Length: 368
Image (cartoon, rainbow, N blue to C red; front, side):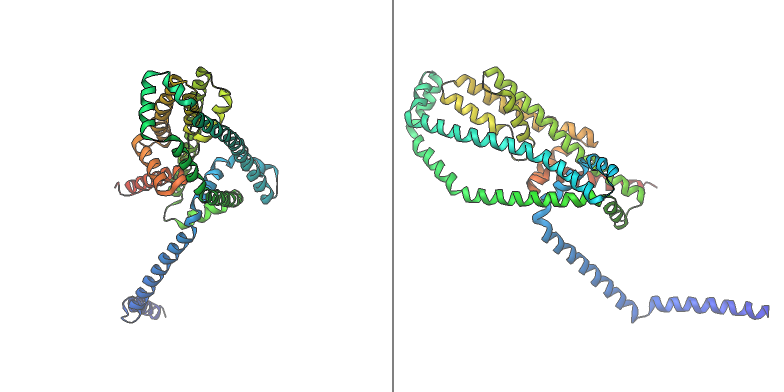
């Protein structure tokens, strides 16, 4: 009886081995499985490409929602620990973050619109009355420069042409503002689900990426640190720039230096804007009123120390937090803005940090 079992076992093993070999090297089955695998891969890549094409217009909103979800996580965690309903806790966290964003924007927008209307009226009155030319003639060097420009350029016609150009572009600007509002609403809507489904989203991402749990945690931590460094660095540099220009406003005797310092701080946090939105018109008004020395001082201050802070100090501060070279941070921010627009301020450094984290993983895996 035992001999029968012993002789049967090798036969079973042999038949199993032959069956596996037949499945592996079957000339009819193997090409078919390969073709199906390639077709599945092509279909997946095509589907991902279509998804990117559909989501690409909303990429800035998703990027800012992710940023706000990481920065505002302590707020959401505070509500989540005290409120059992996950939807309600996420909704309250979104409301707090939205109010923190909207109130400064409304304040800055009101101040800019009010001062822009008043400033445009003053400049137009100065140009029509010729008062600016009489003021410029009191300074010999500037007066000669103004006379040289005035002899070759009709400033009144130039001002009217500029006004007509502004009017013609008004429709485009209105469309841009409307689209900006749409992106803001999409950001708020996306932020709600980032808050509510944070844990589940992280679990899904960890199950999809081809990394071990420890490596996935390392990559996610690197991305989170990068976003925090970028946001906190932007706010810190903006506050420094606003304070420096406000200090110069106070030295030159310009009105409301504290208010304008707050306005410039908020503007400096917005990509493609900055403190020059305030100090450049102020320097122009000083020049039109004959205070050419103050106008030149303010212009030199804005183009010199204030601008250098944004270009030199910001990459250094962010680079220290990201543990990345200052030059890499500089190019990641600049290239990100050129590639992705305003959201590139976040996406550029995140892409660089993600790349560095993946390279570190490969280096450790191949170290042996």
